[in-house]
Length: 402
Image (cartoon, helix red, strand yellow):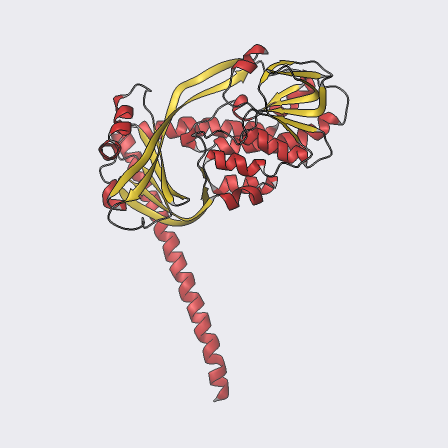
């Protein structure tokens, strides 16, 4: 006899686990299907910026995630090989599998976690049938497909994939250690590419546990010889791209494995299906260099669970027209559009060459320098004002005694 649930979530990554937490807090019967427990290590999100932390707080997930992450409170920004700014920031370093594990710990016990692989899904306006590879069958009113980059299952349902930009960017990840001191002089650093011909967006360094983690964002072909060099001679390969880096952060070495992940930009097509909705990378991917992927995933889940699922389940049926309201959601569409625009805009800025490109780079450098100088001047003025107030309060009683 088949099991049944109100909602079956297929995929237990960040999108699926977050949906399981949010929907599991309701009185709905929810089932999460994923073959991996604990989640597999995956080279994906490794840092949470302030906008993503705000989303986690709004979704009630921050209390799960932030204790497992490393808080970075200061950010250095370097452009053209020069330090342009130092600023306070609220960002966190966390490995993807640690992030997913932290979210999964918040899944309420009444949510059934079925460890298995979905082999087929049959959809209709009223009841959905999910068949697992081991022969088990589950029925549900709604299926939330959160299986990330796995296209096979979507393809079996007639859902297509439109590639917008193949190998749009490549992320290179590694650990960095100082060789002339015990610690680096910063919590985190964003170091933008020095020359457009190097095809570098930026290097970000941030504390993650006991190490300094590095994510290098570049625009190259997957067969580029430099990618082989970064694996075989990582320090030399990095210094060829960023010759001024060591002068800023001090002598360093790259330790451990060097991970390389190309990212294609694609969007799923023919998603208007009865009984099933796609979230996160199952619907569309983002560019890791733009840093919008986690926003897109969390925004999808928050809108789906807080707004659309309660409305859908309040009336009979799960027609394709009914579920289309999620894809038309103004907040979702705005987030998706912003993510897409940032992906192309960052690449265009990073690769802009010639006089106009150089002028734009210097303008951004001077703008950041001016912004940082103004902020430091304002902070010094505030400090002087506080000291003057403290001195005035001390003098007041002394003058009264006279």
